[in-house]
Length: 337
Ligand code: FES
Ligand SMILES: [Fe+2]
Image (cartoon, rainbow, N blue to C red; front, side):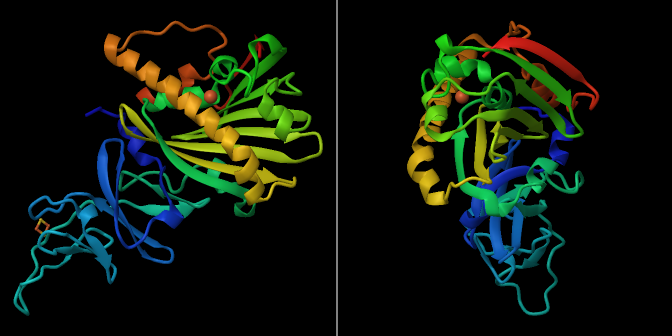
């Protein structure tokens, strides 16, 4: 089991698509913490440590009824605060033992359920999620990447692999142009703005996009990463990936696609854009698996980097030390993208 920095537990993590969680609990793992999550009502959920204090059966194999989660083994039932509320078989009037399971706060934002693995901590998920308009959401999806969360987030936020891993689809090595990346610290993480990229050299761009006036990568602690594309006609496309480490080798990825100000009904996105995005995902998953396997073969090593590796150091610092860049930190890097 990995030791995670204590401050990581005070943040909110995406753990499920809200529409996929019902009275039947689901088992999930966040930062090596095993949790049973169930729906109690239209906007009510309960999340308890996935271990019954009686004989340690998994509560996620039980069921939720009447606002309680009941263990599948002998039926002990727990309230949303984790307190034992019912023991089947005790005679009327008998006192219940003072027993409690760890309970975790849960809330819904942008169609996902967010969980904080510590009783105390931040009030809500990041502004990046809170600022999104649900009506612009076209697509939601979830998957697992078999990679450490730092490697997973670097992959999504760093464009320099796209010419190779997604050759022809996103960018082509032969089609590079000179660009400038401007790094800026924020209250919640950082942004990287790319200037000088009016078009992308791959097929994806030529089929689905028009002239870009803005391209921004954003990180908001703990696990949210967003690519924002702004177009000359005022429209925007936002691709959000929320990364939730299960353990040191696997990371849940929750994806949302928002389209603002342009014609893109959900069915059209599914039919035309999704097969391309899925292919891009599969290519990344494949490369991350090769990388993870090799890390396992050789053991952890220091890594060589250049000025092009803009996002790695701040991601490392956050996940290893709980430190975000100073909001005033800025840096500009010239690169060929
Ligand atoms: S193990 Fe849960 S009620 Fe006995
Ligand atoms: Fe990629």
